[in-house]
Image (cartoon, rainbow, N blue to C red; front, side, top):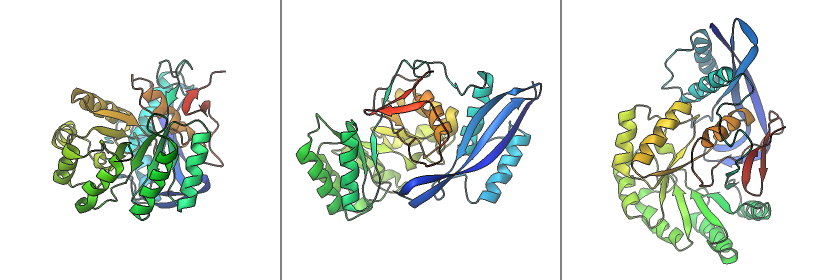
Amino acid sequence: MSIKASYQHRVFHFKRPSGTSRGVLTEKHSWILKTWDAGNPRVVGIGECSVIPGLSPDFSDIESYEMKLDEVCSDLNTNLDDYPSIKFGVESALLDLKNGGNQIYFDNDFTKGLRKLPINGLIWMGEPNFIRQQVTEKIAEGFTTIKMKIAALDIDVELNILREIRSQFDANNITLRVDANGGIPASNALTILHELAKLDIHSIEQPIEKGQLEEMKKLCAISPVPIALDEELIGISETAQKKNLLETIKPQYIILKPSLHGGISGIQEWIELAESMNISWWMTSALESNIGLNVICQLTGEYDNDLPQGLGTGSLYTDNIPSALHVESGYIQLKKG
């Protein structure tokens, strides 16, 4: 089999400007990768190489990124440990090709339409009233787990919004997660964690900036709110490094994004290591289009993990690629037929 590959640059446009830890986004760059056997070009495997400027470790500018993609399309055996977004796209496209080119990457109950995955409702950064509006909408849509970004506004304002939610919905009805994206100063983190604990917060993602291993280790040991690592995992590709990071910090959770954390194989290794240490995890998309999101959902379906996942991003774009993924009442499902 002689496998060929090509790519196409796509720019997806947000329905409304979306506030993230890397600024307000109005568009999203992805590269759709296709693979095929030269002897049977009618069967095509598809994957997505998706980046977030300022966060993706393998992206600096479009020109150099496409130079790497050209190299990869010439030699699919190129080492991609330092290019997780491209690795994710290549692994996806090759899996799809192997399985017949129908965008069925894994054979499990999710891909058969027999299993729904619980997901959290994501609240975008913005002004307080916009945050309140989103929370109201997500709860009305049937989400029972809400994930809110914090450390973007004044922390007292954000705590007040969380208190408002808790005054209406207790932890038995609505699970609250928060994501600080490393925005809390280490010197003030424990104080804020104690305030969050009063509100029955399920977990906090990346409370302090990545790279402060000793400070993060101490927080994970004494925090009244379980801590999940996210940005901390970026750029860690070797098995020994992953193991050392988890053994050193001992987080309660890790958040996994194939485009940032080593592609499909990298995620599988993170999960294996985490589970061996009794560290829980959930999967999150990194703003991929429906192509990448579909792969991540199917990969999640390979595991017996009932925690709400961060996979509700399929409706972000005005020009997303059509998909059989369907979100309803806080679950995502692959609709068949």
